[in-house]
Picture (spheres, rainbow, N blue to C red):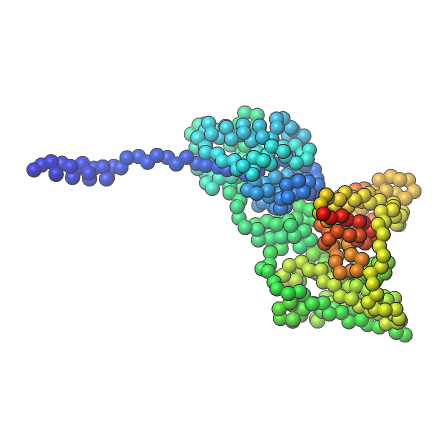
Length: 441
């Protein structure tokens, strides 16, 4: 009769002193390669073009390109590690993963990531490899039991020396992008920061909006009815048709207004003043037919390029003449003491290209290295189709002062396009026209 009581007592003892649980093995996944470069823009463009990735800014980690579930990140070299390149990237990732596993960390490297790390982009030296963890502290504790201490740490990462390799453990960054660059919408980030290409503050990504913003343009006739003395502009919401009340500043202005002659000869880049009912611009326009292109970021909306055709008083020719014939023109231009050359590096199979401008002194041929920032960029490029129905407002990669300016452009479609490069030197803004032919499939 005592056996049941003894069994009950034993069961109670076991319930009060349960068997020790098996410690959970902390896990990490391969997250990014971290390269050195002095030219973020070139590195980002090369990586995005090679792998079809999306440019991204990771808080605490820097600019890079997202490819599947991994990143290629870039930073400026430090003196002690500048130019360092040892073994192949795949070998270094495998060595880092093996080191973590020997210290009790479970490591995962996806097949998609494996394909990228076997052929890293460009010539930028690889500084270190990184792994992401849901619980960085748990990884630290496990490594500490093996007498491994960090060599340095940041707000989001800890770094370890694994033989000759530096291994970064960072917090998982798989958060949705909520901010983007108004001038480079493919540059996105989960938090507010600056664009690595143009240094603009990223703005919140607005929810999708149906319809198109409306641009109303009124022409103020010049004296004697010959041409225009100014323009007034109103921008209306696509849903309510009410005047847009808020605008985000893009390259130091609320509104960039381009005025293009129907013959593709007249070009102006203006910045109308904000008024109580829109914008106003005082400008002398000869009699003619023009396309007015408004480039702006409405509050709560996406970046916009809105077109509106106008005719100024005194113009007698047909208002809607056909598009002028446009031949490719890559000839050197001489403007304000500068020789401006253009070389086009086109992509194969898609209407995309890098426009490579080079500037030299018109008299000596010496490279120009004293360009000044113009509206927050090293230059501006407006690109239009011959019928003026498509346009692109682009900027050189980086923030250099010359002599080379590279502009990565995704064209609306194959064809021949007119473009104007604008740069500032000695306080003067200089424009140079070209025409490029872009192929397709």
